Length: 406
Ligand SMILES: [Fe+2]
Image (cartoon, rainbow, N blue to C red; front, side):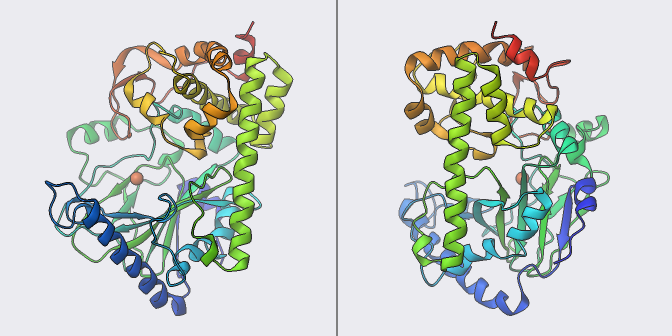
């Protein structure tokens, strides 16, 4: 499959035709539909007493299957293994690796987005970005400009799908004044410069977060769109579908899972180096985590590690000041692409004393990521907060972070 990486880097997205080979489309539809039936049965069983009979299937604006998150959900077996294997297809995995400039990108999440049973109309324009627990938008932009994205996201449609709109180039800039005005007034109408993607069944759109995008219409029109992404930073809460996959695809998941463990190791090394005030080990760990990133990329990783340090301290029971609930809650989950390896990482790799020292090292950087007053910008997934949405600390680099240990 031919791809134009230059266009991808400039516009932040590419529409690719026939990513699913036409002769495989029907079988893949059947496979996913069987999983939809299985998930609907689960939703009936899990429904809240006050919910309608089919639970989430009836209430959600966009009912979503998640193939890799719930252990033993039973969605994937020998009849539906193709739903996982499509992620390993060269049109997805090889293309993603090429776009990321990596050897062997791993799949992050494997989902399916479905149409709702009732019209829910347009969603709100947004960037898939929570600055509160990751980093300010400018940190991402600087890293993408410097070396390229760390993660690419996909929509792959099993039926014709015109739902997604994007603002080309918005992954490389903050919102304009005009966009902010319009998003505050009504985030559910077309933004100026917005492009509607038109996917035929089997086509895909691959895009760079944090591009500004829009789910323009959650209508009852048949929608079964595969959704997820690729990165070198992956985490597999369960691999109970492995036994159903072909040996070749099993090998791929084995490689990605081994790398995930290695990444956790290097993340631990970086945090331990901060505890030990060991600058050269800190630099070495950053280089291992993300080889050949520049100054901006290393600073972005350092901000991710600042959040990781916060989560380690919280998990060990420290009552940190000025840490909002929204940030605390994020530490209870996983977000591998930003080096959040979840509570087990914090519990198993650091003592309580180390957790306290670790936060001492990162607290000065945390302060630089905050302003005095709570504020809000539209188009993000974080609500009003004291952390900056857009700005990285001015005139600040990894050297300044290391200097703050003294
Ligand atoms: Fe989104």
